[in-house]
Length: 468
Image (cartoon, rainbow, N blue to C red):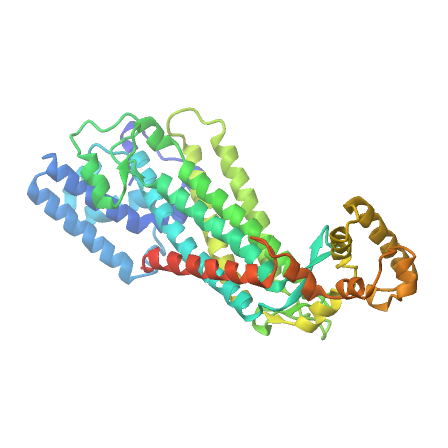
């Protein structure tokens, strides 16, 4: 059965049939297809295009198909169809007879698939928001539990300044919170109904598109039929939101891969999210993190591919757009899986605070604090910077840290050196406490950030509808 066979004679090349089919992918749209068709049948009835008995018969057939699909997760096994829309019409005709041939009145697969895609995008953004909410909660939980833990902060992956580990976690909280915002924006822009646009020019039947939009849960109706059937902004934007979220996840994974290595030893992954070596008995590999990092790269390729598909398409619909399903489903699936894994890894992460604090004495992390203290004593910052820089160079040459420095050595480079400067040089706690500005790493400021984060998670969870 084809939805377009009247124009053609003869048998199509089976190779082309296999090459062009999309049922293997778009079967995931089956419930959306049934839902949209059900609403459209009612719309045709209200427009008096279909008679009431026809509406009832078609609606009953669609409802029966929906029950069949919902009750049998393997409903598609062994089925052969060009696409899910063809399968639905074929199965409906088997159930209700020739009246099923009226299902397509005034509509095209173009506006049908565009509508189903937008419904999927809306649902997918909510699923992704739920997964992000769990990751945000996991980050927040670790931040609350370890508010006093000091961590070496890095720039260029070189020791820079001490920070609170909670402050570090909340940096990723901010990134993922922005990802939530991007998903909400994407959903809002996708929330318009293409149905009624026909193939490209609009339907010739008096379908009430505003009522149809309300019935299908759309906020508004697409204003231009050419645009409605040929654009895939919602797909591309969701892929971008997923790709950027995966970039954030990849950075987080890279950090933990580094921090869990013996050279750092700041954290340890739970055994449940690690693997070993088939050869080396001692290995504990962060495979969960490496898979997230790898899948981020794959998803970036999906986004780039989708943009490349769209860039040269003339208006209106072109079959190239069939490629959007593979990218869309793969992107959403990969991001959902990575978010779920990241939340579980975060929640079970074991910290080694003593190791973190010991490492704050390496790399001269309090050098800036020494310069700042000299500034408070009236020394120009440029001069203070130079004095402390020379002191660091001496210590590095001698293989010493600030802790092992004698007062006699220090005064050769910092003439004002005294017991207070010595205390500043070896106290990471004092260093973080001094960063007491909005957004800073001081405990008081981080506590405020945690309080705000708690409100953010609570509000997100309150507004998200329940799954299913």
